[in-house]
Image (cartoon, rainbow, N blue to C red):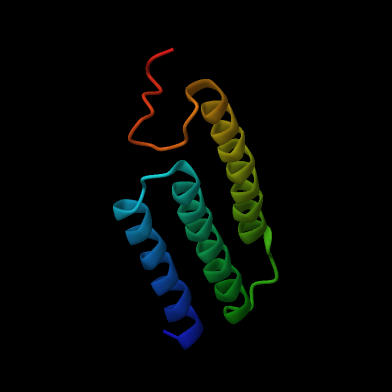
Length: 97
């Protein structure tokens, strides 16, 4: 395993640990999810460069889904902040209307 792949794998693990243990605020959870998706994108991009595959369809698909996930997450953040007057995950009960 090359040092760059090890770096991206460790960054994915760090963001996963951050998402697991420090998800008190919705924005911090969204940032951890975005970091996880970006580390997966970078890992896939370096893998496709190292394996001499000329197709970048899979990394670009992951990047597109990551951008859509960020947009939907920010829309949910704004909607929950407007309706519940807070963005703390412990105070939100999204099953109640």
